[in-house]
Length: 142
Image (cartoon, rainbow, N blue to C red; front, side, top):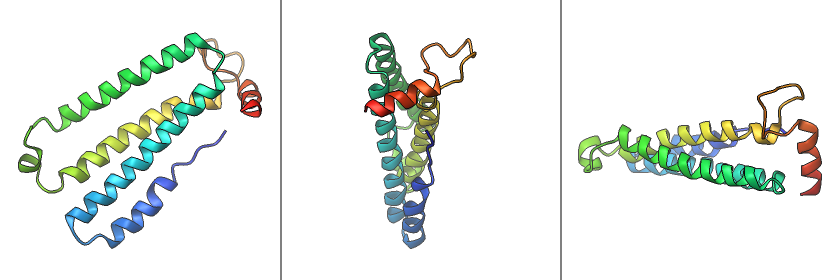
């Protein structure tokens, strides 16, 4: 299973190339984050399908994702602690917020991908991560 993040930059790049104002740049970066967030949701749902028969894993996945969302939000608050964001950080705040949030989201996607790519037999630390052939079989049933 191969994933590409190239799509995250292409349309946003052309959007940014056309942007003449900070508001337009903020909008472009917001779109870029939304695409990353949509990809995260797609990966999460795909993992749920591949591991649909492993109730304990699914429970752990859900718990992990909910905690990660809280961590991401707390990290964003730590990065931008002022309640008067626009005043404190200026008109670029929405753009900066989207850039950082997208970065955290792409890191989460990268981490979750291991449950879709699998780990070869013999890795004693893989535990809940299936082997690649098991994942291919699961994809055949989806």
